[in-house]
Length: 304
Length: 292
Image (cartoon, rainbow over all chains, first blue to last red; front, side):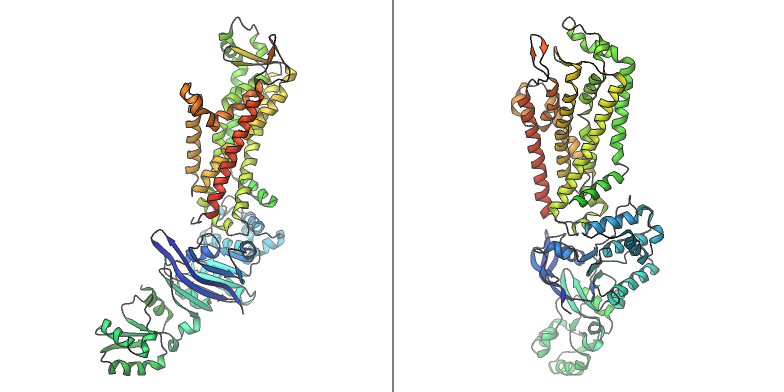
C-alpha cells in the first residue's frame, strides 16, 4: 500500500507554546492509524494542519502523494473529518445538515443515499428532527455521517468517542472496523484513550508535548519482545553515562521519557546480555523488566 | 459557487432570528402609518408651520403615500443598518461560535470563495430586508394614503414634485440605500471575521454607526471639512438627493435632480468602503488559524 498521509518535520508554535514539534509520520493506505497522546499533546493541532485549518510554521504535508498546500481542493475532496466536537447546525434537521455538507464537499447525492447514510449511523428515524433535540451520542453519530457523506478515501476522526456511552463507543468501534475492512478506507483516529486504539488501530503514533515518542504497528508496540525494557538502578545518572559508553547507548529512549526510569528499546531476549554489560560496568541493577502492555508503554512515554 | 450561495441563503432564512428584523421593521412602519392616519394632519401642520406664508398647501394634500414613505425612510434608514449588522456580523463569527466554521473550512472550497459566498448571502439578506422596507413603506402607504404631489421640506424651503415625477425617485432612492446598507453589511462582515462570537462584531458595528452618525449630524463647522466628508454615514444620506429638485421661476423642473454628481460621488465612496472592508476580511481570513 502506498502512503496516504506523509508528514515531514511539521512544527507549529502558538506564541511561546510549541504545539507541534518536528513531527514526521507516514500513514499507509487502508490502515486504521491511531494517533495517541494526552490532552494538549498536539493531536488536534496536527489534525487541523492536515485539514488546512491551521497553517504550519514549517514542515510539509503530503496527502495522496500531493502537497497539501498546492493541491488543497483536490485532496480535501477525498477527505472526511470530525474535528473535536461534532458541531452541526442545531436549527436544521439531520437530513438538512447532511445535504449541506455533501454539497460543500462538491458532490450531488440523492435523497435516498442521504437516508442510507443516516441509516448507517442509526439515525434514519430522526432524519427530520432538528439537531438541537439530539443527544450527544446522536450528534456524534451524525457528525460521522457528515464526514462520510461524500464517500471519502481518507477519514480523519478527532476523539470520535468523546462523550459517548459504552454502547456508543462500541458502535463507533464497529463502524471504524466496517469502514476499514469492508470499504477499504484509510482512517486516521486521534484519541487519548489507549484501550480504544488497541481494539481498532493497525498502527499507532504516540506524541507528547508535540513530539513523536513512538510509532509503529500495533503488534510491534504491544509485543513485549520488541518493545521496551525498563531499568531501575541505584544511581540513574551514572548508569546512563555507563550505558552510553556501550553499544546499548543507541537504544536509550530519552525523547519523551518522563517516567523517571531508564528505558531501552530492545528485544526481551537481549535482557540477559544487557544485564551482563551493566554488571561489568559496575551498574547496580535494582530492576530490569520488559514493558509488556501498551498502556504501560504509553504512560511511560507520556509521563502520566 | 451558485450552489454554495444557495446553501448560505438557505441557512440564513432557516434561522428564526433572521425574521426578528422583518418583524421589527413591520411593527415600526405599522405604528408610523397608524399614527399618521389618525394624527397626520396635525403633524404636517406643525412641520410646515415654519414655512407659513411661503407655502399655502392644505395638510391633507401633503399627507399622501409618497410623503409617508419619505417620512418613514427618513426615520428608518438610520436604524436598518443595525438590523443588517445582526446577520452580517454573525456570518463568520456565528459559524465559529457554533463550531461549524472548522467543518466549512476543511471542505474543498477556497477560503476566498467561502468568504465571497457568505458576503453575497449577507448582501442578499440586506436587499430582501430593503425590499421589505420598500413594500411596507411605499406600497402599503400608497394603498392606505393614496398618491399626490410630494412635498419634501428642507430647511426653510420645500421641494415639490408632481405625482407623476415621484415613483422613479423612490426606485432610485432604494437603489442608493441598497449601496449604503451593503457598506454596513461589509463592515459587520469584516468584524465577524476577526471574532469567534457574534456579539462582538454586532456591537462593534452598532457602535461605529452610532459614533459616525452623531459626527455626521453634528453642526460643528470644524468637522464639516475635516471628518464628515470621509464618514460613510454622511454618504448614506445621499438617497435624499433624489428628492432635492431644480426649480425655474418657482416651478420644479420635472425629472430634475439638484446635485446628481454629489449622489454619484457618495455612491462611489460607499462602494469603495465596501470593497475595502471586504478586502480586509479576505486578507485576514486567508491566513487565519481556525481554532474555534
